[in-house]
Amino acid sequence: MANRKPRGTPGDKSICLPIVGEIDYATLVEDRDRFRAYLDEQIAQHPELFPVEIAGGYRFHGFVTSVRQGIKTRRIRLHQSNEAYQIRPDFVTPYMSETAEQAGKALYLRQHGVSYEGIAYVLGKDETHWYRVTQSVGRSSIVGSTVKTPAALPPI
View 1 (cartoon, rainbow, N blue to C red):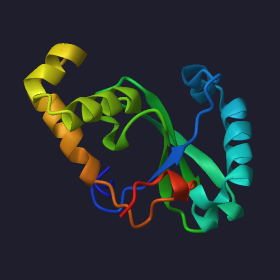
View 2: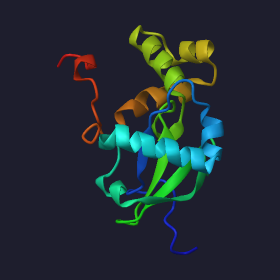
View 3: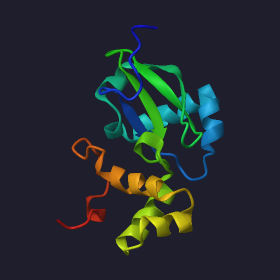
View 4: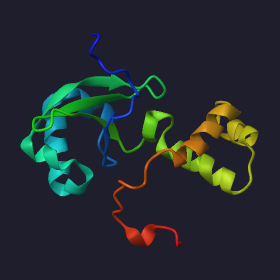
């Protein structure tokens, strides 16, 4: 236990897995065979979203349950590099602080000058939560981000 790295330390890695609308994620994550089949399908369709070493295979490496969202995620360990990755669904923000839908609504309201108190009134939770969610957008590194539709990006 002494050799375990604390959660949230530099070097932790996650992969954002696209979840198609009709898939029930909670059921998918619990079914090991179905999750592997879906993950393999996504690796084949979107190899740019995954580390190159995933071609050498992977094994499941436990679960992580988000305290904030109550969402269970799987972890994998790559055979070649022995690195572990958390497989995060695309409908939650990085660090699993909020759903992408709710964060989008908060950002929309902020764009139109609504105070954090107003956002809390409309969306629930408290002002501090929404302040942190809107500020955390800049936390993720865009250097390694995959851009699938460059035309959808705002102009420079």
